[in-house]
Length: 465
Ligand SMILES: *Cc1c(COP(=O)(O)O)cnc(C)c1O
View 1 (cartoon, rainbow, N blue to C red):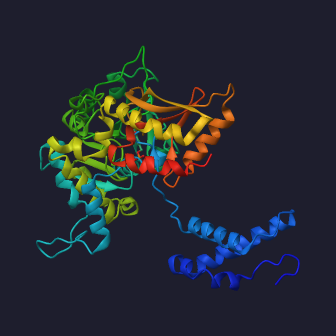
View 2: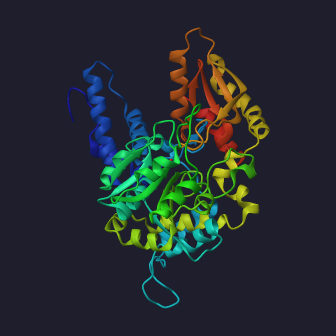
């Protein structure tokens, strides 16, 4: 034992941590013990008193619990952004979760044709379902699935236009966030970008005049995350399709979000669908699985059977394909669309986007006393109107009326207190993520469903301010 500090030995501490070892394993507990002893030694060096053995054991238990906790933790998304990319986008439907768990647990017929006993194709699990949903079951329509929509665009371009040109309007050369910029993706796909028109205006003749011997396809990119307003002109999909087809070329649309249902029917702002795009003459559409569709992270490529076959033969497809758990979640999510009457109730994304404002407000009133109680005199809490956004670049200018718990410190310059409050909510067992605006901390309650109300309220007592 070290004479100067008299800290107990690792072995001595471990002897008293049998139960903790039982829970977390010897290696983790030993590591936590060593780390806690090192921290104590460091503290003593800086003049802190020698900790007692009980205090040390308690600190080790706390440290071990922290180290054993998963890195990927559930949170309450009260940011007001329903499809928050940093918080995992769409929450899956229970049906999707169930099929995903089954696929994870046991062998499954991923690429195995149960009818013939021969080899199957993983895309067949969803291809006919997608054709049913987007094209009334047309036998001319097929689909393939990759890791995300960025991969879907990359693969489609490389498979259909490598070494040739793709014609795109300047107004659609978007950056989707992170490193997804259409010109960069084109380059990586080894496709030459042929820009036409101007930022605000592109005409039909621009498309027609751009077509030459090197042209492989015409492309339209849904400008998901921004809006150009004022003196603008873009060309109708039907017209671009006509120009492409007259020249014997395919017309590809990157839809981005690609909801599969009619948003207007749910009182939501209209968003273009793959159904409309294909009906307007698109040969291939690509869209995300975890944006408005409400499924797992995936990129869906849907369209003309012969083009899908060509895309699937591309070696990149193997590099970008998805696994069984993703396909299970996607299949189950797509099946929900076959029963539109119950879709809103079963698909969390749609349920959250269409949640009535008065329901959110009532939840706020119910939670208000508990939140005020947890904060004491540090801040004043009230329920105030706010607006949620859809997120993930979908419908960037549209807002959904919602209600928030608005937490306002009385101080004239509340910056520091606000950061303290924000950190305290983030530090809860199930971290709560809100947002700061106008000298107040806001918790938009749209995404706190009534079924989670009790869990949210129960943990407020561990709020550490
Ligand atoms: C979101 C989006 C993408 C990227 O999709 P991920 O699924 O995030 O890879 C590509 N294009 C458009 C138009 C988008 O909105």
